[in-house]
Structures are given as C-alpha cells and as structure tokens.
Amino acid sequence: MIDKTELVEVLSKLEVGLSKQDNQTSYFIFRKGEILVCSENIFISHPFDTGLDENAIAGIPMEILKLLKEIKDDEIHFKFIKDKVKIKAGNIKSEMALLQEINLEMIPETPNEDDWEELPANFSEGMNLCKFTVGSDSGSANLYRCVTVNNDTIITSDEGRISKFELNGKMDTFSFIGKEINKLLKFDVNSYFVDEAWIYFSNEDDVVFSVRRAATDYDLETIDTKFDFEGVKITLPDGLPEAIKIIIVALEREIDTERKTSIKINGKKLICRAEKKGIGWAEMKINSGQDKDMDLEFMIHPEFLLKILNYTSVMEVGEGRALFVAGNLSHLQALPD
Image (cartoon, rainbow, N blue to C red):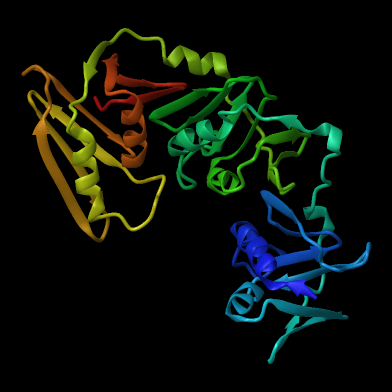
C-alpha cells in the first residue's frame, strides 16, 4: 500500500526533470527507497518507500501522475508483474507498461554522506538573478549558454551582457547549462558535491538534483576587466518600475528569460517599450529626470530590471556600456553604437 497524496507530491516535484521524448527521459524510475528521473543533462532523486526489493528497478510512464491526481482514494496498491505494473485504488484499476530497458549509465552514483559541502547562504539568490543573462540555446556560443561558479562568484553572459554575483562563501569551480537553473531553484538546495562529470545538489529532504558539468568555465580575471571603465552615474526615475509593470502586463503570457524591454532616454523623456511577436507592442513615456543632452538606449529583461531597481536606481554609463551594482550583483550591459 502507498499513500497517494505523498506519492503525487513526490512525482509532481520530479516532473520538472522529465521530457516528452519516447524514451527513458519520460519515465519515473522506481527502485528501493527512491524515485528518480534522468535525462542527458540532469538527474533528480527523491527518497520514497516504493516497496521494491534491493535489486528491483521499474520505469513507469509519466502519464501515471495524471491518473493519480484523478484518484480520490488516499491509498493505492502497486503490483509489478514482469513488463507491467497493476494499479488499484478503490473501484479504479489500471495497468501500465513498464520501460523495457533502463540505461543505468544515465544514473550517476549518489555522493557519500561525508562528501557534501554546505552551499553559501546566498547561492540561490545569486542563481535567481544571474539566470536572466544566460545566452539563448539558439545562436549562442556554448559558453554563453552556461552558468559558471568560480570560487566565490557566479557568472553568466552572452554577446552583450555579463552578470556576476558575489557569494558569501567559496566553492569549487564548475559550469553547467544555464537553462537548468530554474529547475534547480525549485528544490531549495543547501549542499553540493562536484566530481569530474556531475555537480550534485541536495536539500533538507535529501532530494539530490544533479546536473552535468559543461566542458569550459568562464575566467573570472577576464570577466573582471570588462567591468573596468570610466563612466558617469545617472539615476533612473522613480516612475520606471510602474511603467515597466504597466506595459508588460498586456503582453505577458509566461516568465520567459529571453524576454526584453527597451529603455530609451532622450533628454527629459524616457520611453519604456515592450513587444511580443505575434501579439503587438506597448510603450509608456515618463519624465527621465535627466539633462536635455542625455541620449541612451538599452534592452533588458523586465523582471530582471525590476529586481535590480529593488536594490538601486543608479546606473553608470560610459565607453559603450552600462553598469548596475545592486547588492552582491554587478550587471554589465552593452549599449548600441
């Protein structure tokens, strides 16, 4: 017998690691003491009493979660028979085919208890801010698609932006595909371990979120040179956060880390503009609070800019770039010629 509510809660957390491909990446893998999901770049393991024996392992299709959510009974029964699993709950019966072959090489070994190291307390905060500067999957160099942790600094970048966040503790140096950050942040991780192929994270519930290491890392010294320039400080107007919220609300469908908002300052006028392909555009003009000869334009993710403005409204501009320093975050933005 299995508690349905607990199982649904576990599978719902693991669902973020599934894909819709017709292979192992679309299956929940059950084995003794845990349920896991795995793909080419991530592996997530959640403790759970599956009732399976030591050497037993079974892959159940992702569709089982939809079925379980519809079942009203609190108790369900699983019976594994060769290539299928029989499910019974009250007056509901179901039978699902199991994954024919499980590739165990896709499942990394969980680190030993003594291997784990504590994460800096502001690690998740830094990842949450730096995720907006990861390059897109299409058209970006491999390194631009990654996030690097270099000692006490998180780094993300693309062709026109660099974000770096100062951690309040030192870590190993490693990189991984930046699109996995949002998945990682769902698990409130507090410890980590690194080997040659994987970075492992864990939380208070002993969930293990593992992400495959990228081949190259950002060099912090090279990154730091980009932040060394002569500029002048300008203060963005108090009305900018409200303008951003107004113009994006009509075009917003989901949180998209590639979404951009245009900020254009022309003398005493600031134009905040957002566009959504296939939907339309919206803009709002407000007083810039600047001198008449100020001429400046840049593109930035609206949610990211709102987070920055929670810390500071001051921006340093010069030598074709703009710099925001917001708490532990430094964000450099290239300006158009």
